Length: 75
Image 1 (cartoon, rainbow, N blue to C red):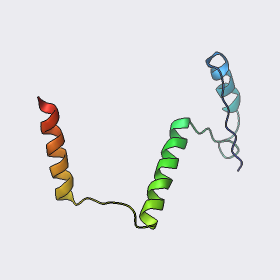
Image 2: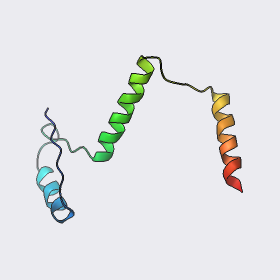
Image 3: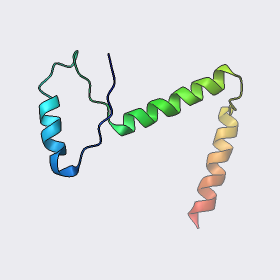
Image 4: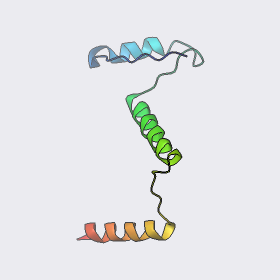
């Protein structure tokens, strides 16, 4: 499957989506910018894990971090 990025004005956005939605899902998938951004972020995270540059937290460390964050924003 090929990918095309379109920048569409708000004026015709609904019409373009209506046209694109007429195609079968196996022929055309609509990917929002949010989906593309999330995919790029996750790919970067996987790359960090594969290169062993990722930092991991234990459950206890995460719990401590969350507690400190909650306390900081309670007042």
